[in-house]
Image (tube, rainbow, N blue to C red; front, side, top):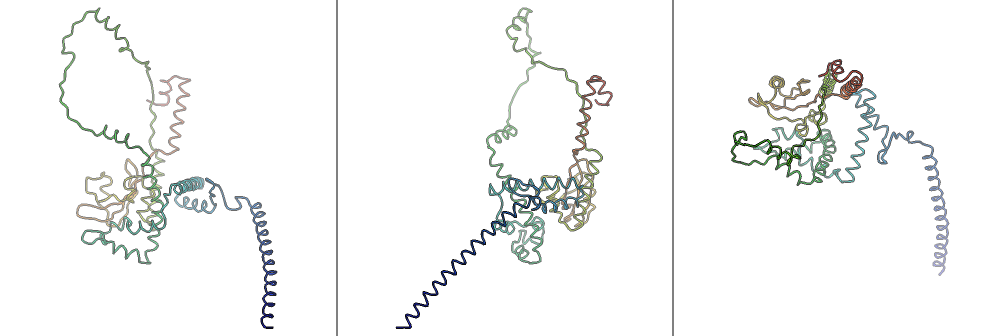
Length: 383
């Protein structure tokens, strides 16, 4: 059967040709791999970390110059000097890297699925407070779902997502740390401070009890109870008080910070987001600046006059008080009440002010060595 024989020869011939071709391909592939390794080896040896755009490492994680430069630019837009912005940006990136490693180790970083679930079940504060989303006094999640599905709202919920990705790990970290505290000492301290009891007692004044004793009896008692009358060594202390209060420059800088925040609000930034980022009031910070409805008499006079002169949606500030600076937003009005959001910046002594007080204290100590305590205090007008 010549056809079959010819077919068998053809197949054998093709097999030989394919075998040669495969070995040729393998040779080229291996050569290409060694070529790539060589390129990577020589290339990585030639480039320094700085040339690769790496300015530092934290726990083996690189900090890129791009991230650093972007953050510096953002801080400088907020009014910081170039040096201040550089320091703040570097510390922020280092802290973020350390926290991110810790979050990953302890599995505190929420997954994309968890973020989506939180957004679905926990509306943003401003939506949760909006009466348009309520039906028969209850929040209407169907209306909220319509807003979620509207493509025009993607940008808004991207901001909310970014806020959650920052806030949720911190919230979980707080819960994690609290779970490591033994409850017994806390419970005991709480009971010690808050336990109330009722008692009946009678007052007896020792001077009303007639006691007669001789000098010998008094001496005998003293000899037996000498230890009771012992007193630990004591010293007569003289001191001066140096006032550590915020300076006028501290106040000026805080007002400038408030003005920068106001400018961001006027440029379209969300008041809620800025309150969460900048407010020093721990309670309202967690609520994205939400203070609630206030009536006359609920807040200080300097704030009350401003609050009840505001119209719905209006933002006012900076408002100076003894504690610090306020920026207020009128959410709504209802009868004699005003619904308010706030950003509070606490007025505290700056690093420079503390340094000046410390230098003054050191100068006083040196002066006491030369002139004595009283003259040094008098010379520096200290009491």
